[in-house]
Image (cartoon, rainbow, N blue to C red; front, side, top):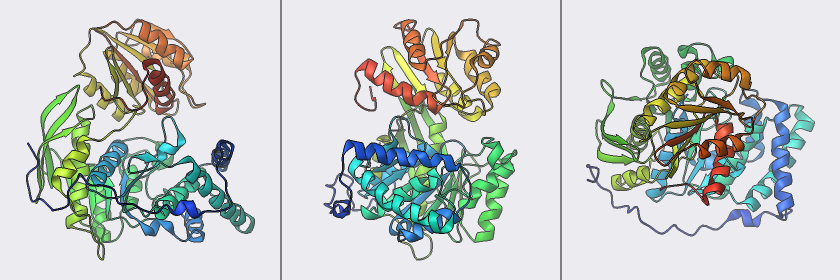
Length: 480
């Protein structure tokens, strides 16, 4: 049944308009595989300058690049959990409505270029190579005169803004990297600011209470720009509401009751969600969300609300998108978000998920309740700087066997410490430091009626996704 409400004349099945590629006019850089690898190496080499919050460095860099962030419209998305899913849904819906749409995310799973996409396609290697040559020259001249080097994330963000400007992007679904107030993406004045949910994570950087973290996330709110949030717990909502009031920003809350926008579950299965979404001027009936887990019901409601608010309540002087609700619904249904409760196979049932904090682990536990299986075999690895005890308390009890491994990062939790924690809940526990060998061992032990879950960190899921695709002969995201 299609979503109800007014329909606009803009069809969602259209031919993309031909846009000249301004990147082709860049000179001085000849693309080769070697040049591309050198460009990536330079980007990653800047990691040595650390992760320093603040906007002065990125603003200076962007000004020297001609302020490319001002050339596109943005929907800015922050939050502890769900911000990636909401960003992906917004981008898919805008693209289906006919807009030339960028999506900027972090981190990537398998390949760096996943961070910067346009109309669902990764930035071409030749374009990234050319842009890096241009930005590197400015960065090096900047540091010679100013003495402070931009961080890796600031450079990548500048590259994304420059790419979207050159490609004449209509909209960018822009995901915050960390926090919000001092995140490098917070140089835009978006059409809508979105804050998904808030819980304890990155407490060493953002604060040790929900209120303190909410304050950092609320830093993306701009004067007069509407705000959509799913953070409706008392402590978080009080902080967000106060900040919105101070800046004269209309606030729209999304929840199951007592909020501006509500949603209700129609069904939740291993094939995804079906929900009804009810807003003050819009309604979506039987909206299908292909992503696994009941938490995606709220994420879909947040994404739809952000788009509706962008159209009806754009910031002063701005023109919002012209939506077709059938197209919005189709875009949500087509959303692909790899590595987040992603079904890689149904025979046997294989799921991968980057549940990296307690809230994510709890959502994973709920999502697995609808997955049919006789036994659950789990490949598990987590970072030592996360609340691994609480996350493990949600994941381990639902598993029949667990194979513990190391995510591909020095931050991985020691396997001896992890084994001691897991054995509080599971008797059949093995240790295999090599994550690929760990998966192969788990697959050998997974019968036709069993399910295999690989989870705990995106640094685990990313390399495993590549390995699983090769093992199963897959070339892209799995839909069956």
